[in-house]
Amino acid sequence: MAVRAVRGATQVDRDEREHVLAATAEVLLAVLERNGLTSEDLISVLFTSTPDLTSEFPAYAARQLGLQDVPLMCASEIDVPGAMPRVLRLLAHVETTASRAEIKHVYLHGAAALRTDLPQ
Image 1: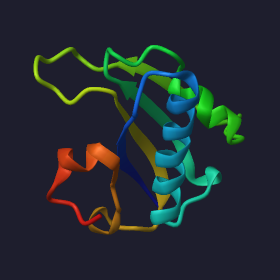
Image 2 (image 1 turned 180 degrees about the vertical axis):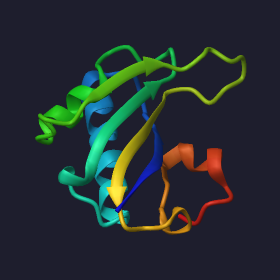
Image 3 (image 1 turned 90 degrees about the horizontal axis):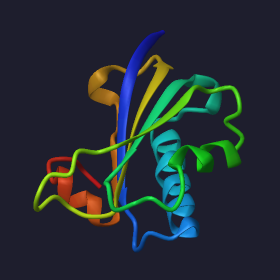
């Protein structure tokens, strides 16, 4: 069993609590599903959001999904001029038998433009 890092990102339509929670849950569940992972495989998850998203902590969505015993942390992205707005990102550390090449990073909605090199 190896420790791997899995990335995910999504763009939120607007900075409203319900949108942030729904978008976070969607990208987190997609990361787990596409990589054949369960909550038991999670070591920790770091969530970041662009500075224009302030209505809710993304980690709260993970808690609502039942991730009570997984260490979670939220941080703000640096405010780079011209950067894509309203983006939530996650970096999940997981235990898996998958190789690095087999890990499927997930970029949803507008955030897909951040990683055009990845298959959708």
